[in-house]
Image 1 (cartoon, rainbow, N blue to C red):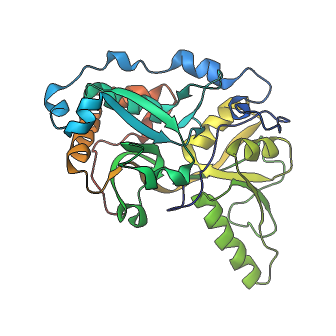
Image 2: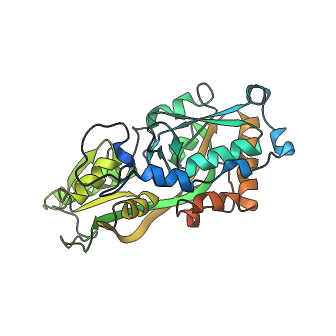
Image 3: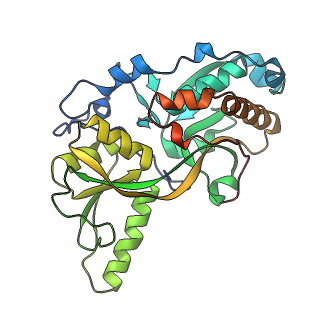
Length: 308
């Protein structure tokens, strides 16, 4: 459940224990090792294996078909979903692989453009054909745009290995928790902290960071007792920090991600929905997500604007 309805971008990949500089691809560097992007690109799904489906491609609106390109807006700071590889330029991640596979089915070249999260939906139908950026489907977004479901994720905590601070997610008052600014998790912690104060307890010490990389870094470094993020992000962070942190507790409040298409673009919506369903039916989508260890979250049906 990545983000709030219309707020700023959520989170990036995990980072090294003491990497706090404002480097453009610092978020791709795991603790104590080489840049994660270098490994991820080598293992990335190959979209050239996906063949065009002429019947689905024929569903495209003329302007998109004539352009030959599917332009995708994505906040590429959120590994393993979407992030920038070690070269500092190339978008990678399971959402990126899916975007390229969709383009292949439609007979289009896919162009993934990095964007601030809160700027994607307003630019759908003008700057971007679609938005693919771990958008949690919710009523607020469905009121603005069409959303095609493809994956389910929830929220999860992480703690330092061995949980040295005896973190308890059921007793958060007075606890220091790192979170990426304006995520759904940030919103939840804010509400819980207010409840603490109403009950006469200490508020939650919420450490907010513009980048998930910084949240992870400060958990590894001991500044925070826990961090809170989307479940695939937590799982990937655990791997990339070489076991310096571990997931804590069950995945909470699972909900689907959706591909964003303009509300008034019926033809493109139906074409993208059909392409995603084809990728689900033939197993390609699971194959692509398996590269990132996230195939368990792939859905069986590409629903349009599913009810929450």
